[in-house]
Length: 239
Image 1 (spheres, rainbow, N blue to C red):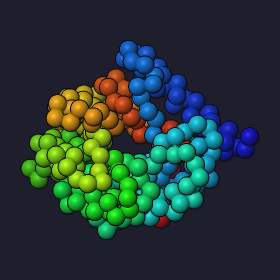
Image 2 (tube, helix red, strand yellow; image 1 turned 120 degrees about the horizontal axis):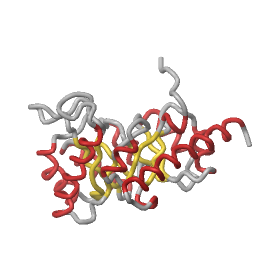
Image 3 (cartoon, helix red, strand yellow; image 1 turned 90 degrees about the horizontal axis):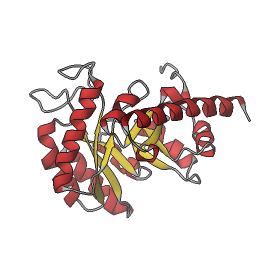
C-alpha cells in the first residue's frame, strides 16, 4: 500500500468511527448517513485511491477543478456532487459530470440547469441550498436562499424537465442567530425538510455537516455529511 493510500485509509477509518459513534448516540442506523468526500484542491489520483477504499460519493465546489478531475475518473463507480456556488455560465460543464447539484439557490439557476440537463439527456438531482443567515436580501453570505424562499424554488425544480428535487442542503452559518450553534442550525434544517416533504415526499435528502461538525449534523438527522479535511488532510494554500 502506498504512503498516500495508507494515510487516506487511516483518515477514512477515523471519520467512519466518528459517524458510527454519532449514529449510536443519536439512536440511528449507520446506513442512514452517507459520507460524501469533498476532494477540492486534491488530484484525481486521490479520487482513485478513495474509490479503491470504497468511497462512492465525492464532491467538488469549483468547476475548473472538477471538470478535468471527473473526466479523468469516468471509469470509477462514483457519484459526483457539486457543492459550490454555481454561476450560470458554468452550468453546461457541471451538468456534464454532476449527478447532484447541492447549491441550487435561485430561479435563474434552475432554468439553466434544466436547459442543459435536457440538452445532455441527463437527470440531475438538485438540493435547495438554505441560508440560515439570510438577511433582508433573502440571500446568505455563502450562497443559499432564506427559508422563506424554499417553497417557490422547490416547486420550480420539481416542475423543471431534466431535474429531480432531492432535498435540502446548508452550511453552518458564521453570522446571525445560528452562528456557533451548529446543532440548532441543523435542527432548523430538519424542520424545513419536514415541511418540504409534505409537498414533495421524495425530497428526503438532507446534506449538512462537515469535518468539524458532522456529529451535530448526524444528531440532528442529516442523511449526508460532506467531509474534506478530515479525510484528505489540511488543504494546500492556493495562489
